[in-house]
Length: 621
Ligand code: M6R
Image (cartoon, rainbow, N blue to C red):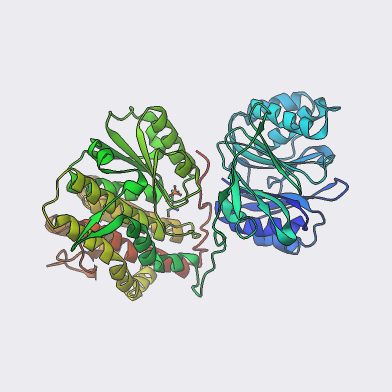
């Protein structure tokens, strides 16, 4: 994980690096650090444990650092405790070479042993330190070569020895004014800055560049970049000069503000109506009086859809939960066999049969497990569709087809609006597949699309009614465990509810298909244990009532989140959802569960936008 940034130009690097890191902090917030190079080449390193604000305080927001060239890092700890010693940048003795690194160097133990045998002394527990000491050795051996060729060659030699994934930015004390970078697996984008910041900036994602650069070059795997004030030079993995046209980037990306809300999570919950509307709008067209869906812009024209015999949905965390709901929508509407599997589990599965469309779902488009699944599926010859929220992400660039969710940048670690957009997009895909397969009676496609287009208004009403969940959040604040249950598509919604609650409130929460309670979990129910039941499908209402009764008779405090017509004869507290097409109702059910998580997190004094131990973008496997 982690976010890295580098700058070489006319302006003081410190404040720019700090600003870049602030925009990358969603990638990790265990520690942060910068290395700034002065005109004479000397490299000054400042590192602090904890949030970026600690580094900002120490450096007066970067103003205390002198030099127009530097690199920075915000850390999500993988190797070594989240303390100052393990914070990046890491350097070789005398700060001859300093690097920041995002990723994991899988063979770091072997490298460390080899380097220690040669007399190197390690000061941290990180995998990164092996890389910088190795780079220093390679660089020293190449003394006498012209400076740039020497550094490029040293980076190539280092890269040839590293296993795993990495994006690395490096400074060399004897090359003032130049930032070097190399990547494999982990992303890097570089752009030309103008005006007072004239020069070049490089970062783990374009959010750090937005507003400074208008366009960015996305480094290919194995590529090496050299940035100075006047130029960005690229070299391929063999050291040959390379070229790639820059792609325009959105000037507002990365500049998200809370807009009067107490937290990004709350703001993003309230942005769900817009996220759903913007995601659906490009694909739903009016044909006379009727609506119809057209996904050709996402590479799914009639012929492509007709050839789909099977769908595989994969992703991690909430994206996987959206995939589980998508499975139910696609199977029910299109009648196509559909499988949902965690991306991290995909490598241990058999390749899918011919005719499979694999949908890889991800907000960031950078999640390492999902990216690895995408690459494996492509290598197996499977057609892939990336359902992603980040247009410049690795998944968007590598998949055969892309269906963009347009939720806008999501800052809070707990996903809300991106999940809602994924659910809406999967509903749309299900409708379109069903229409292509001739499964929808006249007018049914229109009715389903109408229901999708009505979701934003319905969401708005629902978001205005958070009071009951606020009270319930207070009441369950001391619970040891909270259980979430549902059947069919509602089991997927329950899983999302449980994840949200544990992620934001740190209360242990577990989701089960309701029928499974009696096969073991009932033993955990005690007097007052909260059980949140989700029921949006009428045909499940009676069986859900039975499951709730089983829990209630053991003392559980049951709260039912009920779709239209699903709460008749229900006992205990009921949160009623507005009416919609039942298959889309789980998208609505997410809202009260998000509110529950948010208010429970706030009541416990947690940092709801940046829960402990987590990061927004999980770029390590
Ligand atoms: O960026 P992605 O959608 O690929 O992220 C996948 C998960 O890490 C993510 O959904 C995670 O579970 C959320 N923080 C849950 O709120």
